[in-house]
Image (cartoon, rainbow, N blue to C red):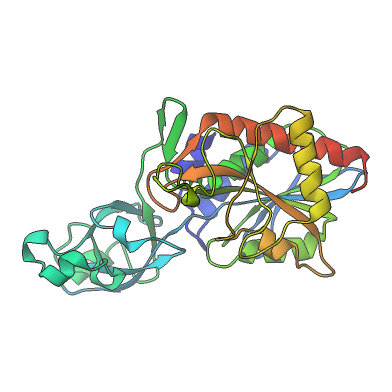
Length: 333
C-alpha cells in the first residue's frame, strides 16, 4: 500500500491521483465523499464519541512559472524545500507525465562566490530535453505541477521513497479503517497541508469533532553528530508532540496517549523541539476548540526525493493509534 501511495502524484493543490488511489482502497469502509476543497473523508458511523483522524495527501513539489525561449522551464517551490538538494534531481510533471531534470550552471563555469554561496531557486530550471519554448508548450504550460521522480525501495528495516510525509500517515488511516470501533469515526485525508493546513481547516469546521488525532511523518535527523538536533530518532517508536509552531497538545489527551503506550508496551518518544507544524494547528482552533494531539512517524530526509522511515516505527505507530482509539471508546478524557 505504501508503494502505491508514494508512487502517486499529489503536489499541494493537485492531489487527485493520490486521492483516487486512496478512494479505491477505502470505498467499502464507510460513507466516502470529497469536499469542495478536495479532502477525502470516510465516515464510519457509530454511537460513540465523534473522532477525526487526519493525514495529509499532498506532497511538496514545484509549479511552472515561466518557459524560456530556449526550452528551459522556470519554477517555484510548492511547500518547504531546501534549494541545496535540488540540483540534478529528476522530476515528473503530473498532468503530462513528462520527465525532466533540475539544471544549474556547471561547476566549471561558476565563480568562486557562486561555488560558496547557497543555490538560489531563481537560478535553477527544469530541462526536459526541449530546444524551444514552442516544443515545451506542446505538453507543459505555466501553472503545471511537477514533483520528484523517485523509486520506492525497501532497504533492510527502512523504506525509501518520496512523499513519506505524509503518505505514511495515509497508509495508517487506511489500515485503521479496516477495524471497527465504538466511535463516530471520521478519517480525513487532507489536502494542501504543506502550504498552510488548508484542507484540515475546512474539514474540521464541517465535522466539528470532539477529538482530533493527526497522524504525520515528522522531522528526523538522528544521523548528525550533535544530539541537540535529534528531534526524533528512527526505530524508537512513534513521536508524540507536546508543542510545535502551530499547536500545543491538549494535556489530558497527551497523558492518555502516553499511558496507553506504556500499558501496552509500545515504544514511543517525545518529539523534541518546537519547530514545524501539522494539521493539528488548524484542527484545534476550529469553532469553540477541539481536543487535539499528533502521533508521528520519524522521517529522515523529509521533503526530499529520498525520505526514509523505519518499518518498526510504522507498526508501532499503527498499534498505538489503534489502542488510543480503543481507549477513547469507553472513557471520558
